[in-house]
Length: 224
Image (cartoon, rainbow, N blue to C red):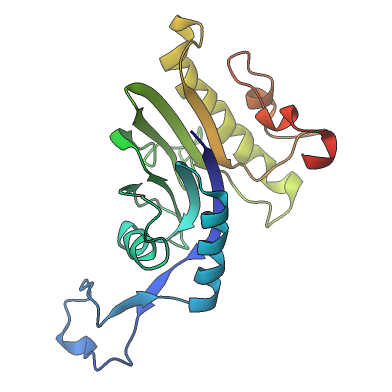
């Protein structure tokens, strides 16, 4: 099977008031063909083209607004790709960007960590979520831990501590499930981790974890 992760950058939809839709007659939660439409047609065509060219059996996505948006995007732009199984859990992100999964294989169960708090109890721990997704791959279990860590928008050093705490918690989640079996099984930590290896990386606990391998290192150096 082929697995991928992709930050699709603001996969949003918006109410479209140009189609004879009267917002005063809406309950403000209506989602239908009149009121609800993909935002920025050209960008979404480019996003779809990238996903089609990757042609993954399972793809983790970051920066998706909601499950209805993902469903609409899939039906309009990815028809024929076979992504019959889709999941997203709304997070607390102020931009309403969430992590999601598209899959050709059945999604057996989902666990969200969106409500977990940071050590100081001043905010939610995960910027979006650590979405734990169990997928049945022809009778074999694959567990994904889909993440989108704190961005570097305010500077790498200033935001590092948040990513360190997020990475440590992901390791705890992995350890709690897989340590007793000596990490034997099919599980993957993936997503947009918003940092890179090397000096002062916030990802040390993941990159140096005995039960995890950075598969990028399998590639020739000039392709990494």
